[in-house]
Amino acid sequence: MTDTDLIDPRSSIRGHIAVGLAAIMLVAGGIGGWAATTEISGALIAPGSVVVESNARKVQHPTGGVVGQIAVTNGKAVTAGDLLVRLDETMTRANLQIVSKTLDEMTTRRARLRAERDGASEVSWPSAFKDRRQEESVVELMTDEQRLFELRNTTRLGQKRQLRERIAQLNEEAVGISAQQAAKSQELDLVNRELDGCANSGASI
Image 1 (cartoon, rainbow, N blue to C red):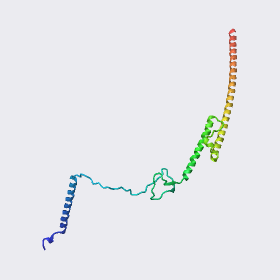
Image 2 (cartoon, rainbow, N blue to C red; image 1 turned 90 degrees about the vertical axis):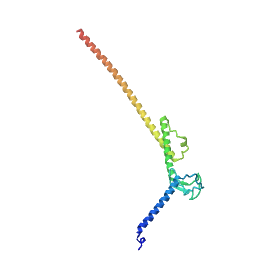
Image 3 (cartoon, rainbow, N blue to C red; image 1 turned 30 degrees about the vertical axis):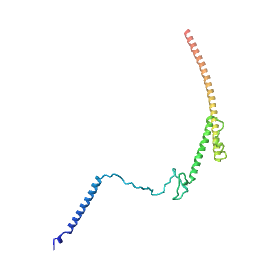
Image 4 (cartoon, helix red, strand yellow; image 1 turned 120 degrees about the horizontal axis):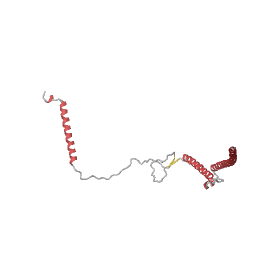
């Protein structure tokens, strides 16, 4: 058996690994040093184009709602101003009716309050309401406000009548008190005269 047959295989593998690592470090160090010290005098310019990943775009209404109709299909080209979707108008019409009814109520109430403020004999309705007398809701609102105006006017006249009667009663009471005051003044004068007469009689005695 020779000396070469007695060499440990593990030591041989370690030697090869060490040599390989030394070679890698030498190449890496050389490339790093070259990159750190070399100056690039220009850049490579090449034509190119940018393409989006997808042509799909999100469409969202600012207030939201239920979509009732979709006017475009997938992949169709559209331009600004084209109709894409149409929202269902059921909820919108319901909200419009509520707002319109509230506005009509406020308008008729304002007309009635102005008539009460000015002391008018009847309510002066806006010209827009006069053109809508064929609408049942408008006629009902005007009738209710007119009835309320007459009721409040009657109540106010009754209160004025009661106040005038109360003023008359207070005036009569004031006259009676004045008469009592005059009678007391006369009575006081008579008492003073009697006192003076008694004093004079005592002095003469």
